[in-house]
Image (cartoon, helix red, strand yellow):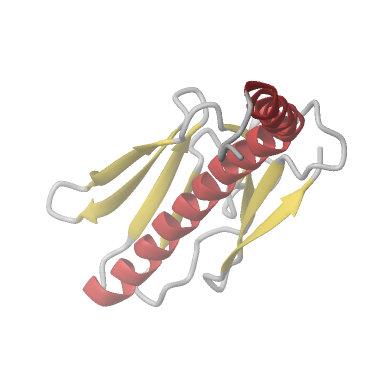
Length: 167
């Protein structure tokens, strides 16, 4: 009696494994794309929270400026000596994630379109405006039932949260 597997048995096992991989690939790819989107949303949330906490800690206003054309956001501190914003850290959204909607209305000019998409945190941790930032992974838009958007909400009181949505 011989021990081991025949060539046909090995080929059958390889065929079954191949079929399982082919069937599971779309699910794995979707999971990767969802993870990229979630990671980007958490990074934006962390940057906003960092601006808030640093503003309270240093008693100096901080802001996060969003640039949808470059898919970037920048954490900055206000330099009272030179009367300008000094960038601390600039981040780029991970590809293919992008800004879909930046809704940060200027509280001093309600109804007007604000040309600078920014959130400023004061020394008490309060935000100067209430609004939201929506990011999207375009690789997920073809899948039904998949939440392909992340809405980062900013409240005047300084609270920030993430909501998952389907487009």
